[in-house]
Length: 309
Image (cartoon, rainbow, N blue to C red; front, top):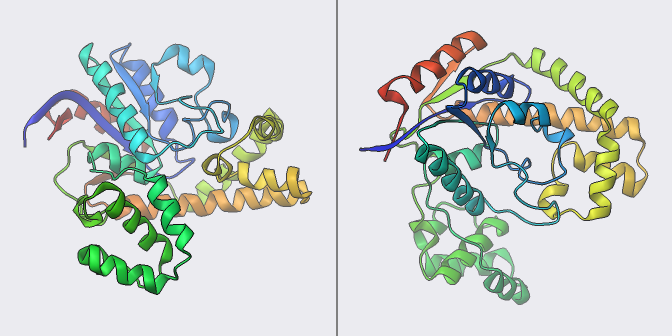
């Protein structure tokens, strides 16, 4: 391993655990030398502000934030595109001698950035050709066994979605899907120190409910209505909170029921996020935000903060 040359640390955890506030406070104390890179699949969309807990204009005036408002909500934005944008952002910070705090709860995007994963691209023409064949999962699986037996061995023969993706990449890139790294279940040596902010689910559940109700008072329904008129991509429409309110606007589902569903889905998201991060043995967990803050600051002031490749 060698030092990349830039200083960085990551703050991870479930939604509503207090990550964003902690990262903002630490960057503020850095007096312009510490900048925040938001690792979130939805804050990249312009106009998706309230329901993504995007930093406010006042916060963005105090601290430099990156990877916000990159594309219109009608655009698709892939993990590979996010990874490329993150590389450019941190290189710009490091070129000026600054340090980076990665903060977010989107696990896959975090792995792509923090572990510098080799991510296969999208091959729409190949995908369309495969879909046009209307083959069932068994036929697709047999083809994957022939083209990339290592990938096939890691998949259920009935999982048509994963098999289709593996075939798309293998046929579109000319290289086996299995050659793109060892997978998300493998955790190599850490490139970036990860600090995890823990919070009891009972506390999170209360915070999530209160936060969503405050978002409604701030105009989240109106925000969703504007975005719907503007046009939203399939990915943007699946954002928790937005998806449920779209059911009210498009299907006439009772608003109170949609709000309840959004809160329930946000709570489930928090549990999935916690499970994702807890599988990673490299994350250093803290229950007390002040202890997490001390560790974050310590990393950025020590050789531990150098990104290693």
